[in-house]
Length: 106
Picture 1 (cartoon, rainbow, N blue to C red):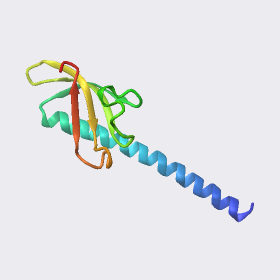
Picture 2 (picture 1 turned 60 degrees about the vertical axis):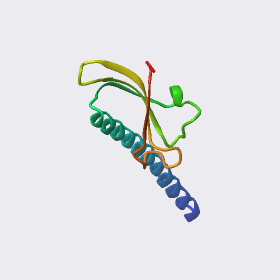
Picture 3 (picture 1 turned 135 degrees about the horizontal axis):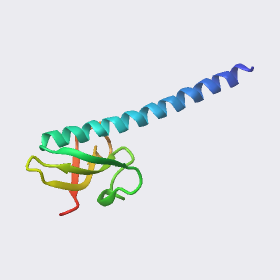
Picture 4 (picture 1 turned 180 degrees about the vertical axis):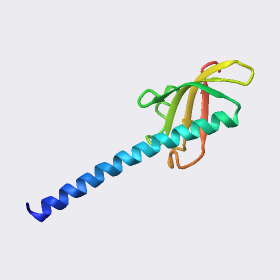
């Protein structure tokens, strides 16, 4: 096999692996941010769903570097709330600790 094609194949495999690793890291970091937000606000997460396309109130004003979750949380008093939680900033994504919340009942 020609060395050029071997190098091209190796570079392609490395590139694909880096894309998968980056995507996985972004998702896991978003989940960690969501868990930290819930803990710091005294909530227990009952349900979470990663929103990949329809992002509720954050649709159209968030970047692909941010993670948006639809959550149901239970407060210390036993009350339940649902809403959208966006993790990360517009430019830096999940590499910042910014978390925005839009509750369904507000």
